[in-house]
Amino acid sequence: MNTIVNKDWLDHKQWTPNTLLAGVLTAVFFVLPMGTSVITGFGILAAVLWIISGKVRYLKDLIKEPWFWPAALFIFLPWFGLLYTPDLMGHGLAYAKKTHYWIYGLALACSLPLFRGRRDILIRAFMAGIAVNAVVALIQLAGWLPDRTGWYSGIGHVYSTLSTYLVIGALCASHYFRRASGSKSRLIWIGLLALFFVHLVILRGRTAYLTFLFISPLIIRNLFPKWSFGKIMLVCLLAPCLMLASPIVRDRVELSVEQLRFHLNAGEDVAWGQSYTANQDRFYMWRGAFEIYRDNPFFGVGTGGYQKMMKIRGSEDAPLIAHPHNDILYMAVHYGFFGIMAYVWLFSQILKNGWRERDTPTGFFIFASGLVIVISGLFNAQTLDAGMAFLLALTTGLQAGLKRFSEQEPNSDLVA
Image (cartoon, rainbow, N blue to C red; front, side, top):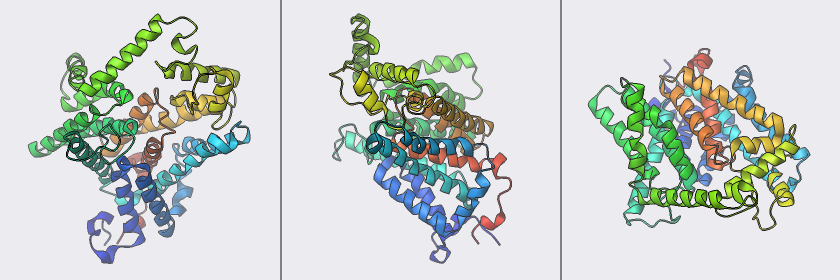
């Protein structure tokens, strides 16, 4: 009789390629906040087991799914863009190589039948990982552990990535709280939500602060499903006040206010990205990216070409800038119309498919991840960041586990 794969993981007799693959994929979600090298190592191991176990043969089934083709376009464009990039051996090849993260997403999509009946173990592993990391960060804040990065990032390294994970974790914790029936379970989930919030406000991620404010109505809605829209929005107004209780948040907000004040008072030749200024380099990046896209609307300038084009047309005193810190502009400037189409196509599939099954843990996680990546991607190149690109690939692959795409899963995929 077939049983769910994760039931006998501790029994060494059950350590087949299938059970090992399921275990490694679970570990991938757990170690996501713990550094690029760690997650890449587990990802490579998962890909190897994916091949050894024979699950790679199910790739042929994925091409029938509507979410597969925008993902394939995301993989294809960086390599196609190498044909006309002005920076082939620099950023061009480096960006194209980042498509290896999609291998792990495809491996996950083909292996999801192993988790039938307990697919949310992956989401729980993700939340457990960011919870462990958050606890380590609080210990660093207390001075009991050294803080190597200077921003209480725990085991991880990049605060911008960690803070985005925390926003997703907070959304998922609120979803589990809404689904929980017992008071003990609810206490655990609300405790996790509080932990994620506390870690968020001791990091320096201004983008994540804004993202959290945008998605806070969804969190409040999950916590109090019977409340009216007006009451939910009223409570959401308290979120900035809670965040400003953190001196780190206050410092970052003060910096933003100073930078905006500079642009309001600066001359027309400097303000709002007309020329480079350290007071707010993003306006300069965004303006330059739009102008480059305007001149190359169809195919863009090729993979990784943004930096060289900005150096040619930008301010002489501007530092080298690798990308425009905006996902849509990143896709537009490098791949033109096709980049914009790929971006809209991929995220419309993720958000639509996740929303349709938002009442399930998997569906809600897909929707939450897609929404947070889109919002935070207005201020950072999330689809280029290693940690976020990895999460995007996994989120895309998880769509294979949604009910509308998994009804035909073969029972033979379960581990005996």
